[in-house]
Image 1 (tube, one colour):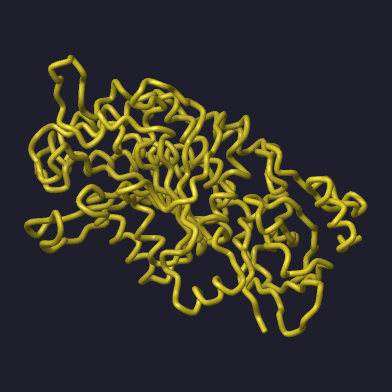
Image 2: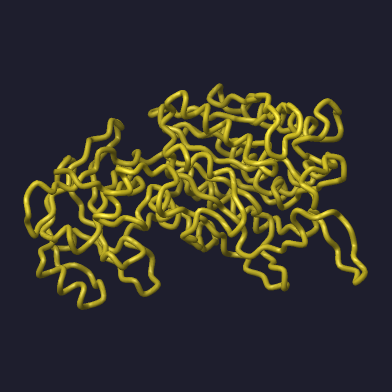
Length: 464
């Protein structure tokens, strides 16, 4: 039995209590419980998460720090110091993981020469280190996870002083490597790209090149995460929050066209960009006991005066978001290594990292990436039909091509609610009518496969 306006009014008056629809629809309130769209971790996912290793993460961070500096403009042909030595070590590590993949994973360098530009005084070779784990069912669908392996000190142009970069961003690279190590032995349905990018501190050069190459190839990147400054749970005042990770997700898309802006202004959706749906998905699958983490979604593209490697992906229309520790200690990032007159230690050193915390961040990434890669893709062509003035809502979408696709669900919420609060099973169909006014609530569509895994939600556009 489908929900009606009467049952919805009753549910809303009861603070979004369960709908009276014969037990087939789910509802969640806004009083602190999990969203209605939450997905319980599978046995397979829990087993994967147990393999993530804080000691390996620590070893990666310390190895990257051992190269002295990883500044983008530092030496590239010294085997022991500089960004070139770090690049070669990263490639060797990823190739060692690929060797255990049965041919499913490949590792490579992606290089180009950046001509003089902002913070790049002379032509400089910039190299990303990539590992690609090819999907076994829908390899054309791609998910990207990154960290940046370059580092800096107070003077962003200082390419010779020691720049340990333990938290910013050896921690993020360590997450990427640990995910690659654990996932290389498995068979994701879709393709996952593990990226250690360069040039972030000089202006997002490596990630911009990666995003450009993917876009030029027409790659179907359905999600991208960057891990940048995920190494510590201790704030500058000493307070700790070891079980929270921030996830920055933009509202109005960076790639929005004037036509898309006009639609958004007319019908809303400022809180329903693909990146916001991606952030909700991460909450759904990774804010639970299996990760031991709370995902604090921040409704911003990034922090004030800062930016990260997700931005070039956003600018090219890809859903992307940034993981960052809950409260930063700025004495341990972008600082010369020194001790001041009061005895305070400055510098981005590994002793200020919390490697158990970084492992839990890796669990959040892994839960999101693995579920995305195993679940159906985000539905395409989702529309709300607006050719007639009615008090009901008809949604249409295109059927996915996944062989294990079981059907679809309609989700909805009040326009003032931050999370989806109601789920309606629709079945294996491409159109569904809900006895609710499209003028009063927001709707979405998500796909479900035979294992019960759900895709991110697609927010429908109006179609006359």
